Length: 540
Ligand SMILES: Cc1cc2nc3c(=O)[nH]c(=O)nc-3n(C[C@H](O)[C@H](O)[C@H](O)COP(=O)(O)OP(=O)(O)OC[C@H]3O[C@@H](n4cnc5c(N)ncnc54)[C@H](O)[C@@H]3O)c2cc1C
Image (cartoon, rainbow, N blue to C red):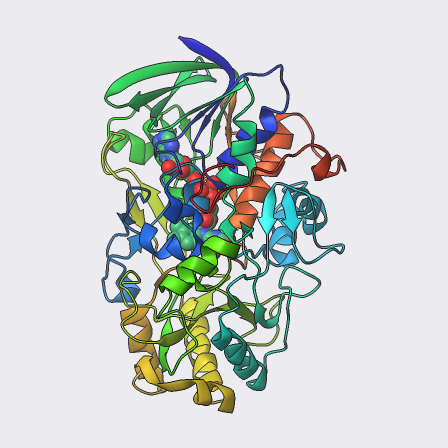
């Protein structure tokens, strides 16, 4: 049996960081297993290519159980199955969350996770192409950049939002989250900067890091109470590998609970019902949280991405990696309070220069823009459970979107906020009519529109939460040699798109594994080499 110091399952946002950071020590051997293939397809690296990755070979393409508050619809649940995981298939919006999110984690007794503790990790990761202040880092592995598309209608929508009462804010990761403005994206030189590009590719040159793609972990091996390795399958062949120090699970908020449950770690009754021997009775798979989003779309006369992809666009992108093909779609955003007395915003608007279809995937058939309210601090909770005691059977995912009345109220306020923005002169000059919106602003019409149109923004977290399944050092309770390092450890969802926070969990998780409970202030530039990619997505 091949033996390593660390075996990591899942090369996603967090797993790539853990593999890269642990293998900085030449004396340890690290194995990283990824169920999906390599990430060489140029569409992964082209920002506007993101829309074509849904339901592709790089997508797990799951679906929720029928959602009671969404007219019983099964919501498509895309998440990445490729080197880089969901950071290779996401919309690249770089939003960290509100300080209150992390202080809320610390308030649960999770030492080391308050905002003051985590900010240095955000800085260590970051290579920001504009901001250079106390809130941003330069020289880190993760490229964070201004838009190279600068789609013109975005500025008009920001102006309209401001006219409707939202303060302008050009940095929601800075001193203040509230307000409306352009967002930065996880891109570098006009290309996607996934966790694989940022962290893993430079580390893959190291002889002590082995990365195996197309390798699906089936279960955790144990010696007594200690996790001692992983059994995985690759092209029909089963292999066991041994970890002398730790097994690290980074399979994401759906994949990691599935693997724990299959390995006998989870709610005892649930496991016994499937004939799985209970190793540790823990609430694995509970506490699932996600952001629910609802696009309102408006026909627009021009200046949108509808015509993107012309020969001129292709030529420009190849020449200077700018223009419409460099757009990550979600070019702007806003954070707002829907009622007074809240410690932080409860609503996000995602602002995009495209028609967002009901099924999200179809090509734009007309020039259009969209504003999508999102409930960023939901009270609704779902679950991930097993359908069968077999790794190849997809887990049962119940999100229970908008089941909490407060979440439905927040979403309704979000719809009304967008309708108010759409009334502003700047917005009216840009748009020629509603493509997708409520029949009126009455409570009944807004509620019907929400139930028919709301879906996910693909931010699942919380299924192996700190304080319930793992401790503040991410060790699985009651088991030795086993940690979870991915979005599933977040006890509550940040008020933000979740890639930056997942990378943070990777950074801090790697430090905890290395026995460092606080960050050492080493300039990231001192330890990191960037890999520049060709427009085709291969290293130069
Ligand atoms: C379509 C989409 C758009 C998004 N847009 C944004 C955005 O604009 N901004 C933002 O901040 N966030 C966005 N997100 C969310 C963000 O990308 C995720 O929160 C983040 O990537 C989660 O990181 P993770 O490490 O927990 O899991 P993932 O990145 O999903 O990684 C998990 C990895 O583990 C692998 N894996 C799972 N099970 C196994 C197994 N049994 N064996 C081997 N490998 C396994 C998976 O294949 C995957 O590669 C988006 C997500 C999606 C899907």
